[in-house]
Amino acid sequence: MATVSSQPTPLEQLGSRTIGMISTLGDLISFCGQLALWMTTTYPRKRLLVPTFYQIGVRSVPVVAITGTFIGMVLAVQAYNQFAQMGLQTRLGSVINVSLVTELGPVLAATMLAGRIGGAMAAEIGTMKVTEQVDALRCLGVNPIRYLVVPRFLACVVLIPLLTVMADFMGVIGGALVSIKIMKIDAFYYWMHSRGFVGLWEVFTGLFKSLFFGAEIAIISCHRGFRSGAGAEGVGRSATEAFVYSFIAILASDFMLGILLNGIYNLIWPGQSASIGN
Image (cartoon, rainbow, N blue to C red):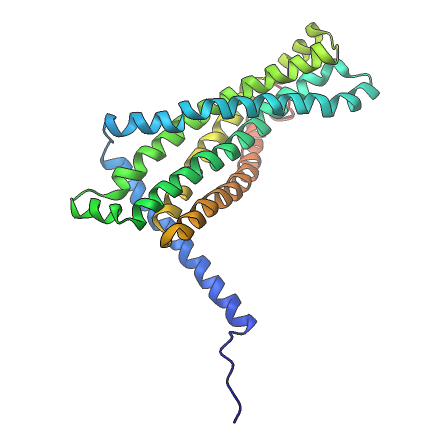
């Protein structure tokens, strides 16, 4: 008598994964809807906001500052030889600072914060779920999303753009120090070309993107924490998924926002390049 294999076929595995992805996406949309509802109907108390702002904002300053500094320094070292071959050393500042302010500063700062903040939020909420603290909040009549998610969401949306400004500033300083002190580029022409290429639009572009990056990190990390599996393994998996999914969301939204902002720029200032400051 032939035995029936209990192993699912590749088609069944593909279907199961597809259903799981759709279910997770629907659950995330529902989670965002609940968050939006509580954001419009309530305001978290100061005793909840201040510690969250401190953990997400103040304690992230050293990491962001170091990251931004080395981004600028690496850009200066890597780009100098190519510019020197064309005799455009003095224009190195324009490339470094435009790249920092519009792309590398917001994206890499958000990536570092996704690893530090996102993983921590997912692990913290996941531990609370595993130890039934989330259920205890419900029993006390406190909505977990209002108590746990709204303060973290507000902190990420408000503070990650400010941390991006810190990363941009430190990157500009790091790139200038390497270019002027080590590569011996004339400081006057370095800053003159930088000012000509970095304008308000470039600064707005980076800060506008960072708002979305902060929201994505908060939503994805808190959602993965609430959906954490049992035990230490489940909490660790949630923290890992929070970083990975946040990183993918940051890159995808950076691409789409870049297309959107370039289209807006071309409508406002037709015939001009979006890489030239106003």
